[in-house]
Image 1 (tube, rainbow, N blue to C red):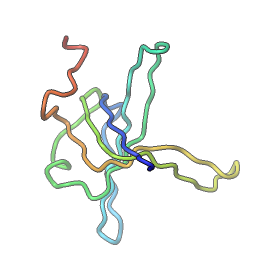
Image 2: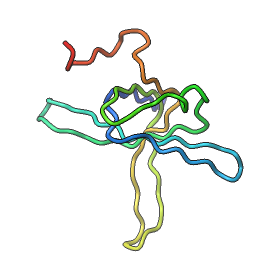
Image 3: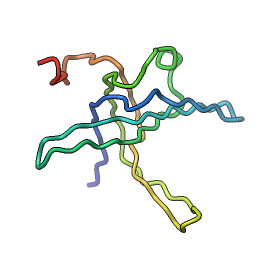
Image 4: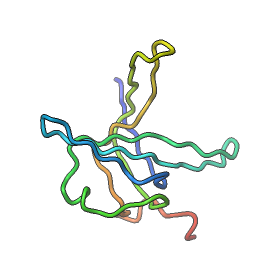
Length: 111
């Protein structure tokens, strides 16, 4: 059985980007900074895409540094660029929260 589930907790690297298409579909894009100390210290910036976000989520003011929690699946996207075929992996979110609803993901900076 295959299973593709990603749970991500991090900080916004930049304010979110909202796109509205002619069809009326909306796209909300985040860049999430995730710090890791194991196996070595590093910072990853990961793209997160949320299709047709709720009006409540769009109405929330968010800025770089805000904490964000996402649940979704990893997806690899392909496109043709000037340098040939390109790809990237992103999280396609099913749920995004700017608040930790259940206290599941404590912020280490506040510990």
